[in-house]
Amino acid sequence: MSPHLPTRCLFLLLLLFLVSTGLSHADQFVLFDVTFPFTKADADNAKPSQSHYYVKGDKLNAERPKDWTAPVDYRNGTVHVRLEVIEKPAGSQPTTWSVCYIPNKGQNHGYGCIGTGVYKDTGVVEKDIEMTSFWQNNDIIWSEGIKEMHLVLKDDHNLHAHKRPEAELFFPTKVRMTLIQVSKGAKYDPKLVPNLPK
Image (cartoon, rainbow, N blue to C red):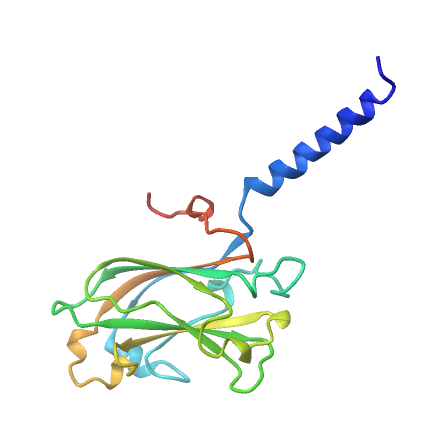
């Protein structure tokens, strides 16, 4: 038997392990997964800003990274937005949510926002968004992490829903919103998200 065989076997086993672990999962985490009703009174009385639903404290994943740039690069990855519209008034009013990242440390305007896209009825809306493409994404210092998220109910012309005279077309509503952060080079895997319907 060749004296190099054990060394070669160990090398092949190590290589197999590295390849299998690299392919076995995507680098992703759920930033938040919230289900909530939202009434006109909720929108009017939201503080400090109306039409806002605030995701902070224990509503935000406590295990989220403190640094989104290293050792895993989420800053240059994607975010998968899943919006399940559970209840919505009749009338098919075009509606959307702005979803804003509020950092521990910002610059310029100090925050940045993605959008769910416009929807008209109940159902599920999903989309992938590049983390380097959304509004004011450079106003966040990603190495310092995210402290909270602001969800803002709007019409399809970017007007806050509470300002619309026909409030009955927007309220009351009930949604489940889930944000999954996916690292650079990885692909969103719904099987890794807890409690998603199949």
